[in-house]
Length: 379
Image (tube, rainbow, N blue to C red; front, side, top):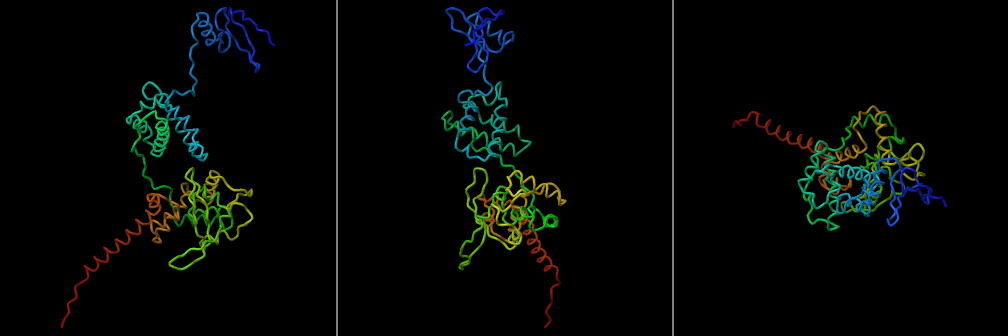
């Protein structure tokens, strides 16, 4: 056992060694409880604690930066991270929500930070003021509202509050989404990358299946099946890919996407000995992020300007479906949408163009008929 050593500059202070081998200092006085002193001798922190110990005053309370006040948004955040819903999020979504929530909790609301005040003091006007700070970036504003709602739901479940201050607040920025690939851009990509290359395979899976990046990366040969279906009263056997969609925690919808002659030609040269349909040069599958990055690089090598993404190929299929007069319901089932608004987003451009042409053709026909000279029948 290490013998205690008295400090020459601080009467009553002696050292002690913890079981971890660290030296700590304590103030001892007969008839008084020992006081552990923080830091090292001759520092402001140590000297202040020593003076308090001599005078018999309680030690100053130092709040840890990550400490949470009871029934605060920060306390709700701690509970949120322990919920099954939070743990079920994919790593990318969880990281994005975590970064956003931690940023929001540090926003000043009056004299204190938003995360420290009681949730019951949060008013609807406060929420609007917080959202206004992100008005220049509508998508970020929407994410902030989603994150605040997650914390509010915890507060409601814990019965800290009875009223939701975010009730019916909506932030849905209008957007045309990713750019659909036009025919000339697709032609440039196809000219650069030949059938059988991983660059062309990634392109073909996204275009002819309408898959998201996550589903392209996870598509397996074991997903290729033959289904029997009745179409127009006749039985048919259809080959295609059947898989469960992957979209963060919303995964779970089973999809069957038929094999088309276009896709069959694209994957014909590929080896069926690999696990995933798309493999890297190292014979392994891609992660979502690496595939998105590779696609950006492959487009640049094909001389395609920035802005055309793999998700844009998914939208291009939506446009093709619209041009083929596919119904909204057919489009939703092909692309796996449950929200009609998102399904219509893919077909808006094609539908507008087609309907405008058809409408003006009718006007032209009427106007030309009107301008034709009337024929007089002579008997």
